[in-house]
Image (cartoon, rainbow, N blue to C red; front, side, top):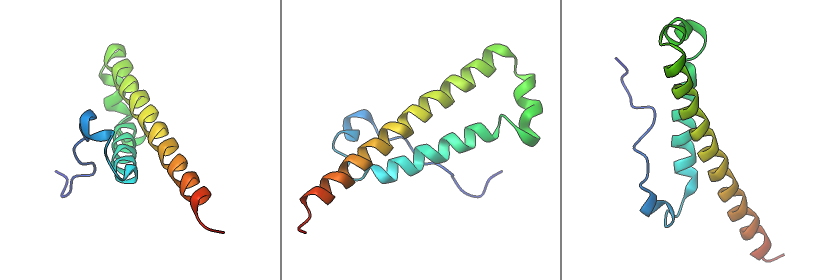
Length: 90
């Protein structure tokens, strides 16, 4: 069994809008996606093949949702960085 938790709990939707730092959530979601996808190739690919087509589709659906969340969080961070750069004194 793993000695550490790779990804923490998901931030509730009600807190996501007020979360001051999307970077932390982006890191957690990226870790979750990486862990999920590591089950789909390499040494774990036998498990992935054995779960059946329906479950494989569901796993990939979850991965797709996480990838979308990661992309949205990255865009939020880029907007914040660009806004901070634009308001910084030159």
